[in-house]
Length: 157
Ligand SMILES: [Ca+2]
Ligand SMILES: [Ca+2]
Image (cartoon, rainbow, N blue to C red; front, side, top):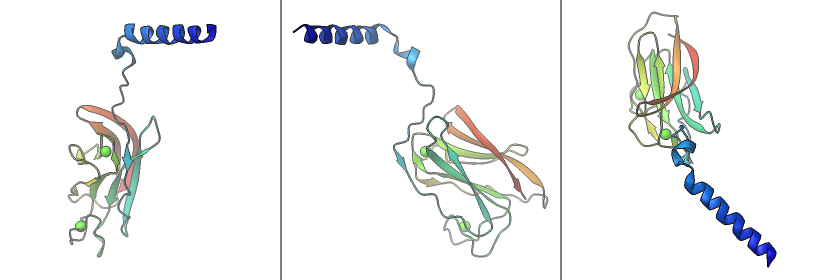
């Protein structure tokens, strides 16, 4: 009987504590919660895939692909057209309410999945660049105006 009473007091104390603490104090500022993960498209010849992972969990978020030059037969997005060169494309590979983005910071070329439900492969973002130059691509997980940088890579044009 005594043991039951103690357990009950403990439960009441816990629920009281939860009730008086403002929930905002414990709100998680990270808005992405992965509930499902999808396979990224296979990497066509000549293209590069950069996977993005959620920092808190290490779970897969999506992939940004870079295509240096048009290679006959390379058609990542399955539109029947050889993929363009000097081009970025983003794939959202997780149902998590967040998108992924790759951006060449110096020129603002941005491939994003923002605003679309996973799985989603965005459009290619291309335009001729000087040959054999290095470009820094910033990789970010996004939701609305919230942004979480998750890495940077160099690609060759
Ligand atoms: Ca294509
Ligand atoms: Ca997502």
